[in-house]
Image (cartoon, rainbow, N blue to C red; front, top):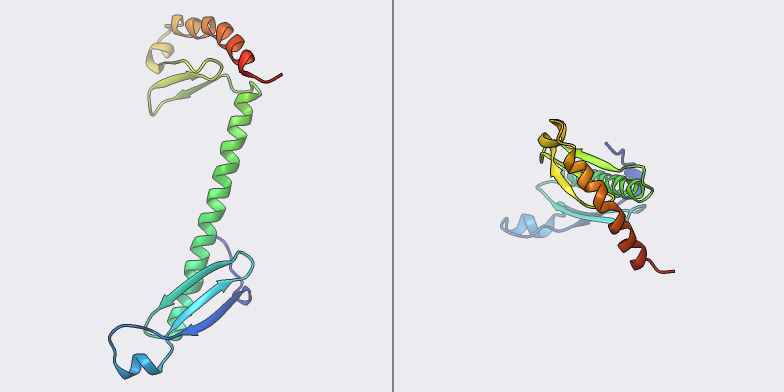
Length: 142
C-alpha cells in the first residue's frame, strides 16, 4: 500500500450540485484534490468537506497503487520477453491451459502428453527450430 503525504495534496473546496436547496448553494462540501508529485486530480462531493477530503485522499492512494502495480507488470513482462529473446527460457509449461510452448519455434504441445513421456512432440519442436531460426535471421535487418 502506498503512503500518501497529505502535504503533497492541494485541496480546493468546490460547491456541490443537485437537490438540497439553499444549503447546497451556500456551502462548499465538495473538494478538488491535486496530488502534486503525480498530477492525479480527483473531484469528490459528499455531505461534508472533511468527508470529501478523506475520500479524495483514499482515491488518490488507490490510483497510485494501480499505477505502481501497472508499472511492475510492465517491468515483469519486459523482463520475461528479454529472457526469451536471450534464450534463457526455452520452453514454458502452462498447467492452467494444459500446454507446453517452445519459445524458439512458437510450437505448442499438449502438456499431459509431454509429461507422460511422448517426447516425439518435443523432438518435432526441435526439428522445426532450425528452419524457423533461418527464417527469423532473414527477417532481421543487417
